[in-house]
Image (cartoon, rainbow, N blue to C red; front, top):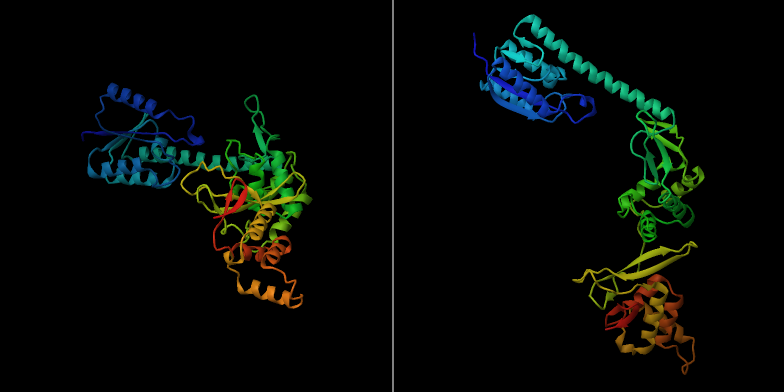
Length: 408
């Protein structure tokens, strides 16, 4: 009789379909107890945590087959047949190796399988039964999820703004309730887009300044902000499996508000959503750390929008205390500098010079408008492009310091 050298194979999946299986440690302990009792010779041990649903996906099982092919062992000791296979592909490999007499015996906790028609047939039935259980379980899960949707409850995690409250007892249905801390921010996000025509990037910045955070306390990112603004769950509907269902949860917004927000988002040009032109971002510098200054827009609780400019804090220190300056104040400060400096300190472009000459043609020779007066007028009533040209006219650099504009 051929001497049997066993490889002990233990497998445990973390998936829910195998929660009733023994742990790997328990399987090894049980198999070693049987080996000692029956005098089985274990020459190698293989263990892994991997599902056996799919063929050829387990590194440990592939190692097991290679060991059989190389002759390191010729028998397998495992807790149950479904530890080896729960799919037709891997089962076929084992049976082929039995036919080739490479695999002499499979020993489990309750029985053994050798290269005889009856025992191979029984092995195939037991492993096929495990596959049937997997397939039926998948169908039952899908059926249960569909029933849950028809009851108005979306499977899976709930979006930010809601919280899932588990049943107090086993078997009790979980409920979806409003997150009283975050739901008001969700409503604000849609109102900002629908009523104030704000971009997704602006909505993110405003809500961040107002204290909107995720359940883990982190800042809500731009991609999640976009996802929030597209989520139908907030007005009471949800999509699952390609179908639309009416939820039983309490809506945060109305369908009308959602539709209006979507209409405003669709009017944005492709690739431009979330962008805003800040004409003076690349002109100013921070006097304290030398960083660039960028613009940001904010909306107060009355819905009025303000634009601020702030230090980017890239100049070697993250502790720069440079204060914000509002856009209106920026123009006032630059106007003061324009009045104080001499014309030779300004590098005026041709358009400004031509406009000034045209104006003075119609004024008396003893009452011409000065360069300073003309520039101050533009800073008060000109377009952003014209104001930007003036800021670029200074030969020396304009810098922000303690909320004021200085010339260096």
